Structures are given as structure tokens and as C-alpha cells.
Amino acid sequence: MSDEVRSFNFSDRSGEFKVDVWCDGRQYDADTEAYRPIYSYKIAGPEWTYDANDIFGACSEVPNLAAASQSLFAFLYASQQGMAGSGRFHAENEHADLYPQHVREWAYHFSEQLELVHSELVKEVTGSQ
Image 1 (tube, one colour):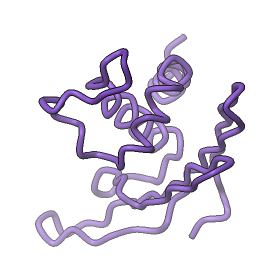
Image 2: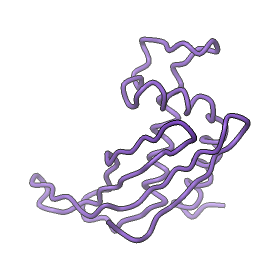
Image 3: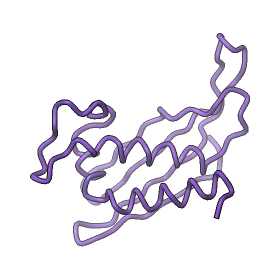
Image 4: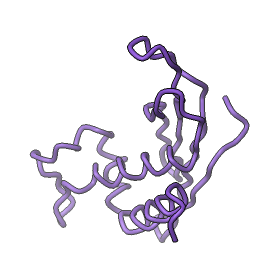
């Protein structure tokens, strides 16, 4: 695991949540005969923690925590889009199986902040203003 961690904080009346993203090393891809970065992340709040390592960089890519974080927040945002205003999930949402329900509910609750952080990361990764 890399010593470098990218952290993001989300808070409101429901509590404080912290999202950490880091590079866990490289994974060999036999099809391309190249290595690609693999990233882990943790979402920690007052009552639960979710961690996974399912974000991957491109083959032969130099690890980039901003790009990995951008991908994570895009997936989190997409996972909550199937929620109705009542808090119930639409079964037809193609991204409904990306995360457990409590993570999707968290993403729904913080969707505006997720979208803002994602757009800032897009600017950082692409170098645009």
C-alpha cells in the first residue's frame, strides 16, 4: 500500500463521513502483458464503514489518486440515480448493484456534494479551469 492517501470529508446534521482513496499496488493484466494500478477506498461514518478495492487504472498508467477518486465518485453518483424522492430504489437502475443499499442511500443523501467533488476532480485530472 502506498503511503499517499487522498481524503474527502462530507458532513451535515446526520454526521461526519470521510472517504479515503489510495493505491494498493499494481495488478498484472495477462491480455495486455502490462500492469495497471489498483486502488482501494474506505467510506467511514459514525455508524458504518465500507471498504473495497475495485477501482483500476489503465494498463501501464502511473498511479493517479485524483483520477481514481474521480472514478469512485462517478460510480457512487451513478449508483444513487435510481432512487426515487421517497427513498425507494427503482429496480431498473442499471447501477443499483454497484454498492450495498446503505452506501447507495449515503450517496443519495450526499449527491450534491458528490457531484461537486467529482467536477473539481475532473478539472484537476484534465487540467482545465
